[in-house]
Figure 1 (cartoon, rainbow, N blue to C red):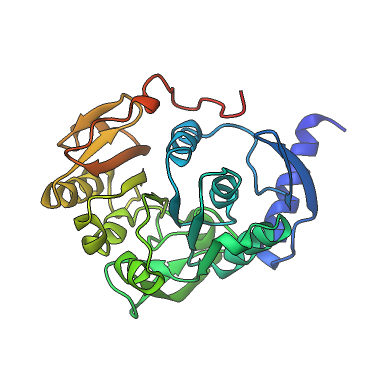
Figure 2: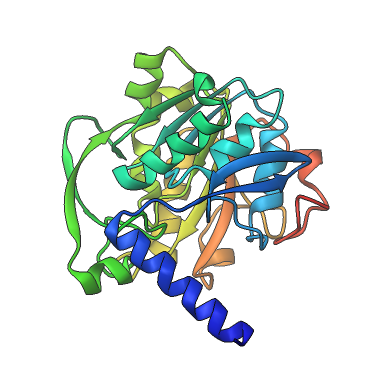
Length: 280
């Protein structure tokens, strides 16, 4: 059997398992010098754009909010770092969140984790339409962005929660907030007004460009929020501060570091290239 056929079979298997909610098998993965037992597919072996940047941020953090946690890859990585003491996973897809919890429990890391099944937004106790299928990583409030779920007509209504309410309820002030919410970045930030006012946190944001909210418009919303809270936005691919959407208007996906304006760009991020391998 050719490698191409094997790859196709594996993709089909993953899709069927995801859509039917069948758990992936347990596998042992060597990751950052540790052997972790995880559900297959949790740890992505091919470096993504942001892996090395986010890992550097984790090494300089103690508490992370993992907003859009999916199956918990980054929460697992975070809690494998000795200095990270607490992670809050926020995920609207309950199937994905269950896998994330499964992974952390299996590796004796759940005591440092809290799990929130909700969509991070401007306020708590509302609801929003959420396009998702199985444990899909590309779930979104935007139908045009969640292609697989839209084709399947798979939409559900989920509750919302604000980061300010999570901080208050858990009595936590995270120094790192990872946001990967497939186009709803500005909604998450709008619900983090009190958190931002403390000037103690970095927001690591994966920016998206759904058909309903092109990058220029999405970036304008995020940058306006940053300016109104005296925060600065740094375009990680180039390590430069941006104040208008123009430098990233051409991107379908990119990454910003948003932090208090008085903070310099972290020296430990300089020299890290997009898609760098964090495992050496």
